[in-house]
Amino acid sequence: MLSAAPFHAELADGTDGARAWWVRTADGLRIRVAHYPGPAEATGTVLLFPGRTEYVEKYGRVARDFAERGFHTLTIDWRGQGLADRMLGDPRTGHVHLFHDYQHDVAAMMDAAAELGLPGPYFLEGHSMGGCIGLRALAEGLPVSACAFTGPMWGIRIAAPVRPAAWALGWSTARMGLDHHYAPSTGPDSYTATGAFEGNLLTTSREGWDYMNRQVIEVPELQLGGPSLRWLHQALGECLALARLPSPRIPCISFVGSNERIVDVARVQARMADWPGGKLEVVPGGEHEVLMEDAVTRGRIVSQMADLFETAARTEAQALSA
Image (cartoon, rainbow, N blue to C red; front, side, top):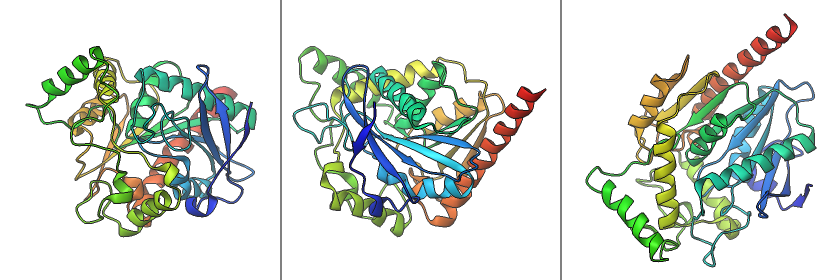
């Protein structure tokens, strides 16, 4: 059952008529989804899975680009971030009990899509952590006709000498009841609220940086700090588990910036090399958030995704009519 939720349309800069709703997950959490309408005669609906720290308003401009190409967009505040229920007494800690719990959020999002009557076929776009959640959802039968990823978190960039320590720290603190603490070198500060544009790890676009900064400054409830030790341990385990799975047999395109410094690019390259018919595009000079680069770059990436989705929709329609 959907109920109206707050939505900051002016900050999102998305399509007219965009709205947000509260939905309940099977395990009892309240999360937020937002629908950015497409045209009356739409090609389908993009299920947009955001990354860690993100929220539905952040993808308003991306949804507007998709609408211009004929798609509705439905996106989500994952548990523990955005305006969804936070998981700890310190609301700035990015935390999850089990990484698979995010699949409860996916299920609630799909229920919302059905209740809203959003047109099929469905397509997946997953960014960073959303790419990790999305790949798991695909493995468990998410009903989409094609998928796209940007900076997908199929591995976390950690220096090789430090990686064993990260595993050990997560394992040991869980047994001592201390895994709710922030991971080393992180804290409660929101990166886009307190960091500087110069030298940032997300975008080379000043406009893109200011867009993200304004959102979290004007709505501080959207801010999220670093991940908990438990989140880090769970994320490392999920990335390892996903690496052992075969790639889904649906059309896929992925994008990484040539200056990506957050996810493990080698894992992305390995996954896409193994994806039947999959394509990996490197965005020259791009950082982690290639959809938060300048409007021309964002438009080019969305157009490539839309081309893939349109082709998949036509192929599916032809198969059904044969």
